[in-house]
Image 1 (cartoon, helix red, strand yellow):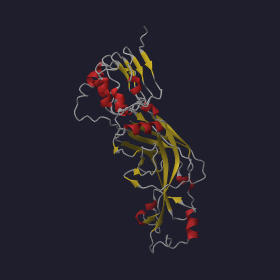
Image 2 (tube, helix red, strand yellow):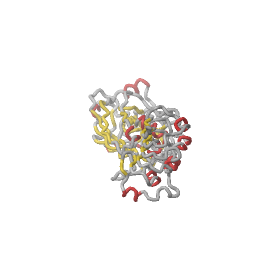
Image 3 (cartoon, rainbow, N blue to C red):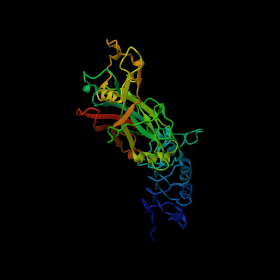
Image 4 (cartoon, rainbow, N blue to C red):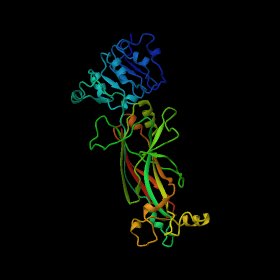
Length: 387
């Protein structure tokens, strides 16, 4: 009599294990492959115990939808012969408590996600499963935006014959979207990456040159009206600090987010992260007073339009000018800022869902187009996202 010991059902569109265990499961089965199926319910967990699979040695549950790690581990702990387990690709595998909780909950396990469990890991994670108050099912992704080079200097097009006003200032910043239900908190990156930490680097490119963007800023977070991660995954837009132009701009921006909806986080990472390079232009005019005959109030629409066509960027020594007719920056009236996207880049993050620890990318925004017709140079944005 032939006894089956291997059952491979990977990517078979299984949505439930009821039919698999409704009859008499093969009692001598040693390998069960259930990866890449839409499994993950509490009912599915009840079908993965030693009662159904008393001799199971290897179980593949990778790339499924299990989110309740403690419940699943409680069921798997009843498998007396289990030695090899694949869980990567499940939402709970993104949590900081994984794989420590798994290793300590299954002392008989020898291999987790294709990696052998060392004695040092056993010692390091000992007692984690019984720890009271352990934060389970929470991920802490960190987004870090670094140094940028290559933005064209706006002062290259300054016309010496241009009128004094309006004074034009330019600032640059990076924006990206992250899950709405996260709590951002600024923190410094550790010099060493922890064993249960994953990371990624990203940038973005947009074809909407010349577009004026109006967004409400609050504490470094720009509100986004439309979700970018499906129907259940809403996002917020985050912004770095705004920097004046220089050949090399170091944003040095790091934000850590607390994520409890790990299913949404998995969807978000599969979609990938977008970084946008944005420019903010502000026109400043002298406040109405007798000392400065050229004011915003006494200009006709035609005159103002003519002057705006000859805008000149503000110079660093503006307040130190010897021209007595110039007013200090504090006495200037600013127009509403004009924002536009200079470039954007999309970076895929699927490797983090599959157990990747770190992704670092030197992003190329390509050719940037400024207000001038001067040929733009290539801009590179280096950023990193630690998850």
